[in-house]
Image 1 (cartoon, rainbow, N blue to C red):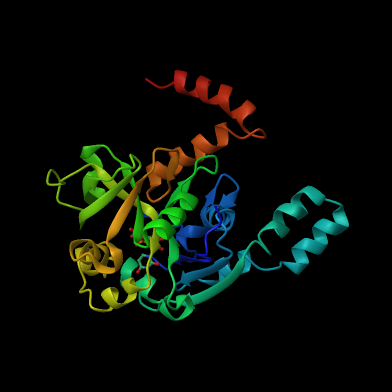
Image 2: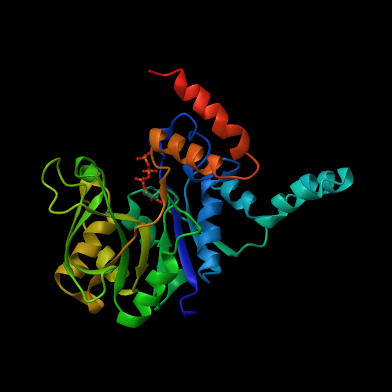
Length: 296
Ligand code: UTP
């Protein structure tokens, strides 16, 4: 089902401190996952769900992001002259993927603050937010399901995933009650990164949201929370608690998600994706088996 929502917001202004020094002069969203920057997977996902108007929230090192989604005339004509059409099409693919827009965040004062920078562009309509830390396998459906739920319920919809309780202190955690749909829950409370052992459930927020424009008013009055940052989770908690603009629902995702937010998970994501690729998998798989046999 095609929905009326057309805008996606991709915050990419964080400092990426967990990846320093790689992220000293480059946003972490540009780190390659196999041979594509993480941000391109996310833009492709938005476009596949019908969201062709993409607003990127950029920080200090925005040039690499803008350049990636723009023409590279010199590179393109060199590949053309060489007759390397395969690589040329890879380079050209990201040029016209979406209608790209950019806005600066200035100081990275948190994810909530980054989303607030989208207010002018979004206007008074629902929109999606996608984070480059979470890659969703394109064989599994998530965003289009969330867009349909948003239209059906006219509420705020966030993506949730069951996580190991030992990891719940690293996520925003939701308290929920069931709905008549086994994949959808009504959210009664949200806590950003609860102290270890205090999480009230194992349902964690993953980086996909379909928000209503009322989020902007709530974010404007949201004080800095965890880490001194304006947290999107805190604004969503207020919307859930006070049932603002239809309240908050979660779509529980049971598909394949690759976490690229920290170094270990990033390495795992690359290996997982590469073994499944036709061009790399057949050589990588036996090498991995041999290599793992040398470990004890
Ligand atoms: P993270 O907290 O994972 O990103 O934010 P970070 O702060 O860059 O990472 P570390 O912890 O220092 O390594 C989740 C998403 O929100 C964006 C980030 O770019 C990332 O995509 N973000 C975060 C902003 O755009 N602005 C901010 O102020 C904070």
